[in-house]
Image (cartoon, rainbow, N blue to C red; front, side, top):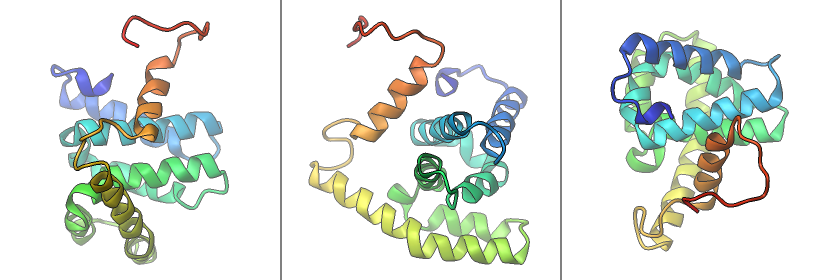
Length: 168
């Protein structure tokens, strides 16, 4: 997985993130879009230092997908949006820093700010409350959706024969 490669060059990382950002765009197959968002969320959650320097590349297509008509894409985009801006961990700090320097048209910037205040902060608070109810940060391991995301990413290209693997 992308997050495990410590020898990944900055150019290679940028190429991968550009490909993911491109795959999110409307017109691509729904499964490709959704899985690209899942990968962005998972990498941001596990290795945020890889995605945070590339917010200007990732934020616009992720944000465009939070209003998608296809519910699985919309939900994956919401989760990716929270992850790239570290909303659960740092509330609005990362987003405020991004939006203050972002080169977006005024309508998109205003729309993104409204969405962040209205939806992302509420979802972030819910996720924080869920973690606290579980006994704190990571006390019970990954949440079900995070575990499913990782399982799905690792299964790409594999044939599911309904058998367990060595690590299960």
